[in-house]
Amino acid sequence: MSLLRPFYEKYFRVEVKGVENIPAEGGALIVANHSGTLPLDGLMMQVAVHDHHPRGRHLRLLAADLVFMLPVINELARKAGHTLACAEDAERLLERGELVGVMPEGFKGIGKPFSERYKLQRFGRGGFVSTALRTGTPIVPCSIVGAEEIYPMIGNAKTLARVLGFPYFPITPTFPWLGPLGAVPLPTKWTIQFGEPIPTDGYPPEAAEDPMLMFNLTDQVREQIQHTLYKLLVQRRSVFF
Amino acid sequence: MGRDTVHVCGEVGERQALILGKVVLVTGVARQLGGRFVRRIQRDPEVERVIAVDAVPPEHHLGGADFVQADIRQPAIAKVLAEFDVDTVVHMDVTATALGRSGRGSVKETNVIGTMQLLGACQKSPTVKRLVVKSSTSVYGSAPKDPAVFTETTPPKSLPSGGFAKDIVEVEGYVRGFARRRPDVAVCVLRFANILGPAAESPLAEYFSLPVLPTVFGYDPRLQFVHEDDAVEVLRLGSHEPRRGTLNSGTFNIAGDGQLLLSQCSRRLGRPTVPVLLPAVTWVGSALRTLGATDFSPEQIRLLTHGRVVATRQMRETLGFRPKYTTAETFADFVRSRGPGLLPPAALAGAVDRIAALPFAGGNRCAN
Figure 1 (cartoon, chains in turn green, cyan):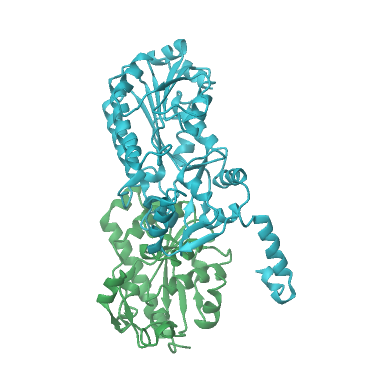
Figure 2: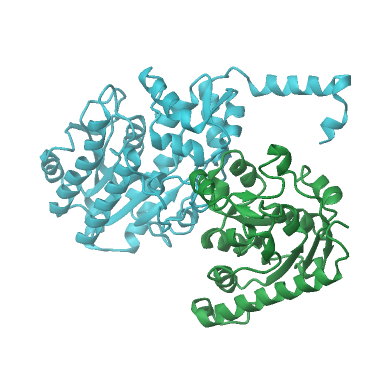
């Protein structure tokens, strides 16, 4: 985390709003938008929660299985407290009263072209809602602005991605043309806004099995994140400052 | 403690056990763990007689147990069960490696065909009331798509394609079939994490005894261990009547508390690691196997790549077993038995302190 902090403070100059919406103790599920070709937004969110929350809480991120297949990355991810995005792990962490971060857009969100920036993709099958319902933990919507522009993805080399076994292979104005230099993210100005928590403890226990309620809650979370995104975008003066 | 539960539940079989004492049959006694279990269970007051079975005579003594040299792959095992009126069967002859110089084929046969024969014999025997099977957490396999912690009900994401793990999957399948056909027999399947201890003789113990540990580059697996003493204790718990408020039939994960990373293990052992790129690992493994250094099977490599951690809530709450050793303590005990490696931790720590104290290294490195 001390390696990430210079990025957080100096490079992306992250501004955090609404950190009081994260409960001081007990489990909570933080749901955020996902963008930026490489999942730096998750890591920055982890630093934001740890450094700005009065209790210095640790955010446990749920990561895609690809993370745990890659050498070196999987080792770092485990040691940073991330785990695989599956219902068992999420439930176990929430039951222990941990703060869990999830980005339900997954690869659809992070690997979307630049032209679709800040348009939320489908939120999977809403598995995160049923996990929150089962454990009765609140959902904290979180909107991240700035991550979309770090690697403007203008193309996707699908054949190359298939050969390498990745879900997408990004082509940006600088990558892969400039080699490793092209993999340097653009120094955009970030804002992370945590929204009003959505309680899930008022529902009967069988609610987690109710697809209608699940879709409604998923949409509610999605709408809230999207609205906050638009609001933050209107307030933003420039991409870089 | 075992006695008063016998008084509480007064079924015919248990009363008989009280009068006559139990007759326990143990397979796989030529191994260290089997031998230790045989010696331990004889001392229990409710046990009258212990029948120790293996295909080869053990090198260690078995106390007052009756050793029967029988191959569990042969139907003769049914005669042994009938002759001694066995009521408890402890099946420990499910192992990853062969004793001595026999190949993988015969190990697989003992594991799978042996279990089938033994279960067939148990099914015909009217006296058998309890079956304990030593299984392994290998049934879960080891893959990046697995959840961080396995519970007893987690289905494996990638079924083991061969080797010991596949044997275990098949053995457990047969045991489940047996439990369905003989619902009157209490069946206890104990899935052990890697068993370590001063006398451990598992592939992992051999691996940790190498002077230099080859690891998979870029992966630091999480491992869990059980101490031999705890393994013997929990097998004993499974083969007696359940204590009050507990249940000892079913499937249980058995592991010490906590977990260790392979890097932590190597530092505690004082043995340096050599990271090998994943594609090259298989070659190194087969080279080591040809040299006879250790059994580097594909599943062992998978374990050392992705690691495996199991939940032990069932073990604590349902089975009522609390291991004496945590994973870290088990490993510490194992390290004591192996002697110092090339880089003893104390010497290494001293060297690091001296480097940190050097003027050019700066004091702020210590602060981090």
